[in-house]
Amino acid sequence: MHKTLYISVFFFAGLLISSSAAAQQASDVFIKDAYGKTYPLSAYDSLSKVETIMLIPVKTNGVIEGYIIKSIAQTVITFVPDGKKYNILEIAVTDNPTLKIGQKMPAFKLNDMNGKVYIKDSLKGKVVVMNFWFKACGPCKQEMPYLNGLADYYKDNKEVTFIGASTDDSVVCEAFLQKNIFKYHIVPKCRDLADKWNIHSFPINIVIDKQGKIVLYTEGYNFGIENYLNESIKQALAN
Image (cartoon, rainbow, N blue to C red; front, side):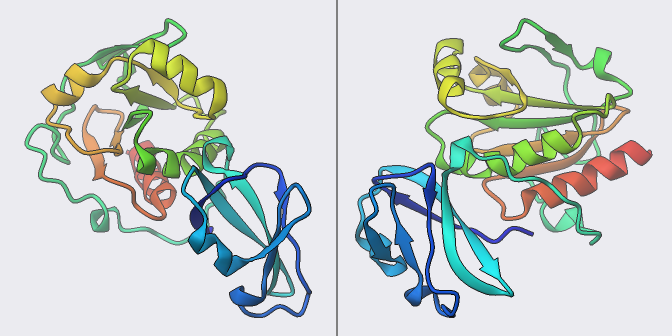
């Protein structure tokens, strides 16, 4: 499980951070920006919030020596199953009257940014992983590196399809994708569909099994979402 700290700073991407190998406490860790200026980790509390980034710790023999800073939207976190069995019921709590776990997914027809069409009936026999998001949604971008890693993990499995349903139009989605990584098949203009399905909070993650039944439905950002998605995908593939 990746443990990361999310903060906002004036500078991001490509910054390498280092400190003494003897540093044991976060307050002792210094961060060096691209211009060579160093800051204590605590200094970030006073920096303006401009760009959401991710602090990835660099350790030697269990000791944090520094951090690598990356923009969240430009990051793919490699997904590696940890062997633990995750209870998806712990995270799959929903009061959505339209998308209840165990029930059939409503019919849909979606057109992605590349012109590919996804119809519920034509996806029978496949596991569908669906994410509802929009450009200005901070939590949506926060989970994208983990979703990207999971999509990469299943990229060679033809039985699993990842769909990113955005409430933004195609122009906004295109501009977003020019600067950000999201490895799902992106479907724009899904506001009406979200309203029809009683989706009013974001992000939303849904897993649909081979028979078209909903096996996972989550609302909001959930730490470790990639593990719960993977657990439900595995169960859906096995049935």
